[in-house]
Length: 561
Ligand code: AMP
Image 1: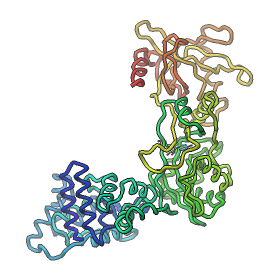
Image 2: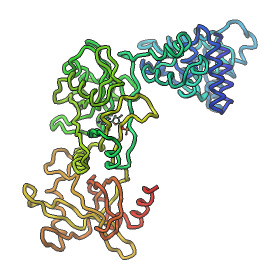
Image 3: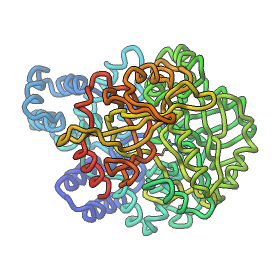
Image 4: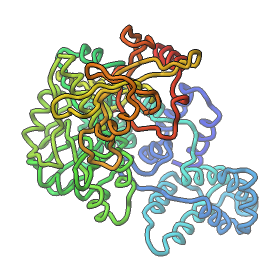
């Protein structure tokens, strides 16, 4: 196919807002693509590699400016000046090529294949002299291009195509062009995140071919996602057979193993194998099957205490490209597995979760850092709430409530039987106005704390909840606040004491997270907090700066909506 046909389509797409009309344009394009179908499909989405290949074009404005100058003979300064006024190097190149082309117009016919191959070649240039080689390749394309073609080549290179065709349009266009069902295209895409291959199969083998598409080890599969549940009770009641797991605060990982080869993808299907050689080792040691695709949440843990650390710590590992070994020992990780979708040639999507879990347990020999996530199978709200508190206490996000009878449906916009439950309210700054003395091993410490908001009209503090979650018995991390330190801080502020209950002078402000604000008769504010959890002491705030009654009311109304 001529590249000019593709750039005409791009232009048309740019001026067509309707999605339906866009789908028609793209479907016509796919139909007309002939032998170039795969390249046209990829380029229509502004790419030259499928998602899972993770090859970045990495082309900067400056390199393009130099290449334009080289190809057209226009001084770099002039190109830069034009760029400053137009802000779009696509327009800039088009302008200079059309000026130059008056003399040399129509010499070469640029094909889609040619553009596609050169861009792929560009992406593969690395190491010494790669910038020069890239510049030569870009300027060779510019030299061969007509003005409009040059506009879209440069926009593709800079990943600024912006012709408004998202995945949905491509899916529907494939369906329309080759007369297959959009759902079959979607299903195929979930297995094989590469529209170019899917389009070819749809064209050559139709619906039947699409149905036969299976996942392949090494090519990332779209993952099952969770929906939000308003609260734990609703989540538990949603399924006849529910299993509950901690919702860990880490990175979703999809691990592919084929013999000695291991690949690790994130939820967005980025390949992070290079960053996690420790995980690769764990997989080799603990996975007792030749081939599989398993999923879990990887979290960072403290080097000494092995306690979970927040996602921000792990993200340093994900972004790291150099000195990987040092990072491995500085920020160790723990993998918490929760699913399996493929084992030794068999796809497990159609099996219910309880069966997949059994299979997972069979193929994994867990160790301290490569574990199968703990599951609680219960319908008992009390037990589930205790599990929820434990998760929050361990600084995890909340819970996942999973339907044990549900199959694995990969991809977006599908209800796959996972409900997430986590505190959603914004954190509140509240004042401690009371506490109770603990018993047993907690005796001698104040353990539950009465929280209050300020009523600006009367300047009184009105109670809104009791909190003990989030305070630690022993200090294990720098940021931990213990019962002991809370007691020391509050003891001098005790105003009254009776029957193990103390009243505390309103002075100390703490930040508290909670799941919900409820109406309550128990507390003088008329509100109660559900699952309040200590976040930190707000030394910098005085009691006068704590949340007010009015604010609590507003938040309550907001959450109802
Ligand atoms: P969200 O990103 O809030 O939609 O929640 C879904 C994400 O939670 C998944 O993609 C996982 O990365 C993460 N997650 C943490 N713990 C679990 C678990 N036990 N089961 C499934 N997903 C989990």
